[in-house]
Length: 290
Image (cartoon, rainbow, N blue to C red; front, side):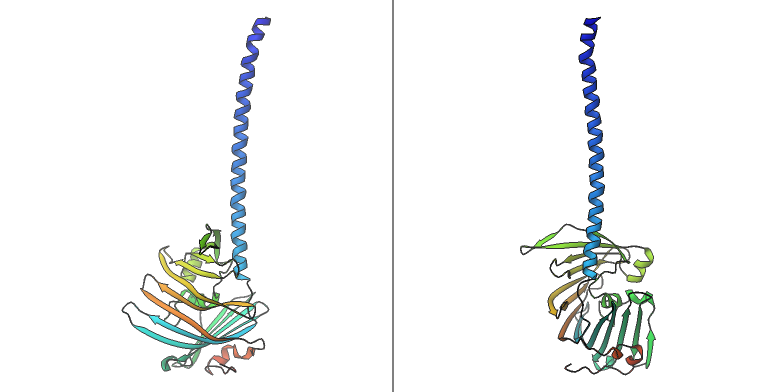
């Protein structure tokens, strides 16, 4: 009996060892899976935080300047347009006015946008030929702005990504000329939002010092590459960073729009009466120094 027990005990010990190793492997696998889920959650939170930093970067309470558009088409033709732009942020509500000054055929054409903290956003367009201020529907956000490769949404968003429109994830950071940049990716939350924006996804290169996108690649509603917005010059006006030179290349249409801002001024006491729908029909507003 003692001999039997002596022989049996090592076997039992080996079985217990195997069971212990199996249990440890199982627990280890669970821990790795939990770690992966936790890492994924942290990545998502970091992406949301980055997107929020882009949205909430400093803005001027009031600024104005001149916009110069150069439009290149697929046959090599070039057209130029100029406009006065006015930008105001008051209690989180953003107002943008763009008033064309040239060419003569577009002179006094005006666009006005209200992006509100609460309530529905509003947009208006004034065409001198019709002598009528027309309120634009929300569905026009994905339409192209005055023959350029920018959409009305691009103009309104001002290099920001509305948090309620997109699901965000982080891409792998990129190093360019020994500087590390964030990569933020977005996919529209719903099919309706895809149709409204005219985009289904984007990949943006974000400057970690300014939280300004220096390059944005968009896909169309079907997920095919559509266009690239590239910032060529970034300037600080008062406390806000502004893209004063950027290009938009539409890969599908072989179009290019170059935008240059000049004489940009911080105007803290900007008259809010300028930025009203009723004022659009009066043409280009008069702002001292511009």
